[in-house]
Image 1 (tube, rainbow, N blue to C red):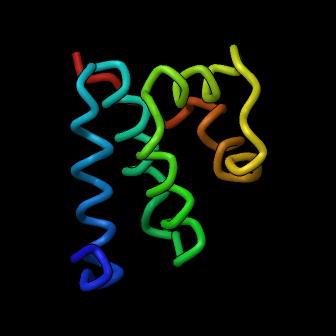
Image 2 (image 1 turned 90 degrees about the vertical axis):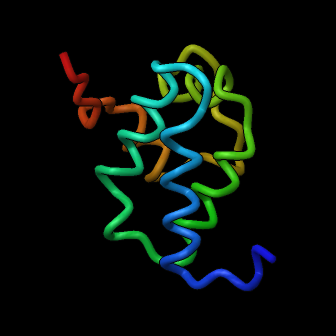
Image 3 (image 1 turned 120 degrees about the horizontal axis):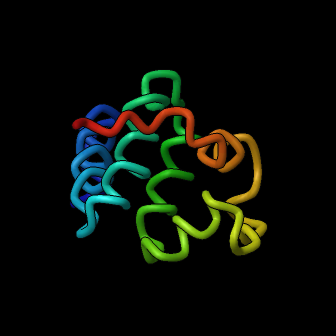
Length: 92
């Protein structure tokens, strides 16, 4: 069934998954990243993000906070943008 989704359908699914991680901190970090950058993504960037969503939140957050080394398959411009953390707008 995932193969039947359009590119926009995959983005919608990724948005849902990014904002429903299980903890508020992960939602803000991963969901906020999606909201800030997804509009400019092509196939390669979306595939990277979909793979990232398969990883455990604690690992993704550690890579974003640079407390653990980022695996080679996730290294590059996207994780570097995530590591800036300037996209997290925490509602008060």
